[in-house]
Length: 276
Ligand code: NAP
Image (tube, rainbow, N blue to C red; front, side, top):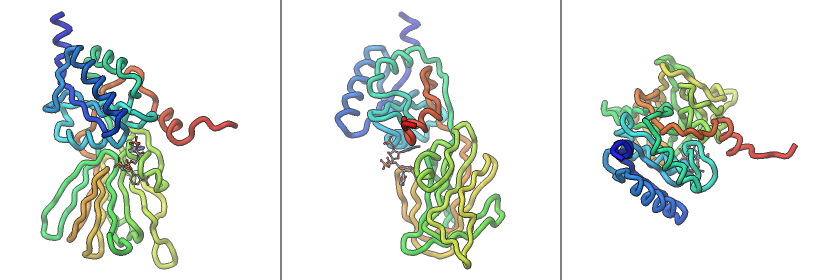
């Protein structure tokens, strides 16, 4: 009994999207975890359980990103199988049983660090789990792309997106980028509708850069830009440069015994069972 109590002294925070299915799972989890002796608290949680979809997990990540070193995440999907979600809504009991047996094992994935440097010398920094995207609001974006402080190309088009390996299946994929296995520690730079003709020339394909490399985008025109970091968008003037590199901190997920392989998830999400 004493041993049981020690195991279940874990602090768990629950976050659910606003729909009846997620709320029902929230209530079920709240009761079952409490009965099992876990401490339900949104403050300093050891484990954050996000209920909804991958979008909800992004919100959970940003709410608790200041605790990435001490907090692990679990995703419960109330629809299909997601990329950040190991459990479906009908697997609540299995999740609670696994949490009872849990001894801190984790699966960790890279996180992107984005630093906006302004012309007055000020800086703002963000972390992204999926990607960060820079666009010029009024006209075609013209920007110099640097890799490790060496000029790579001058981009003209709608914008540029830099994604993490786990974000490679999100916006990056819609932009024609490659799907990257999340154990590969790299970033991917993808173009959004680049202008390519006799006058303007960019690589035209996405670029995958290793962990040690850094990307910087330097907008040519002093104008208004949008920077989307996962599910939030910020509008800025006077940007000197935006830097992108892999953060020192990773996101940690509670290791699940029944963890579905990444390729199965990719197949489930994008291919399905096509009759041949
Ligand atoms: P949202 O419109 O609710 O989410 C967009 C879709 O992206 C949802 O179906 C979501 O899955 C899915 N998704 C999120 N992360 C994913 C990942 N790592 N791999 C595969 N699919 C993923 O918007 P949101 O909730 O604010 O999410 C913001 C994200 O939407 C951004 O990070 C960006 O990647 C993505 N996005 C995509 C496009 C595009 O593909 N054209 C455009 C803008 C934004 P769930 O249904 O499981 O939540």
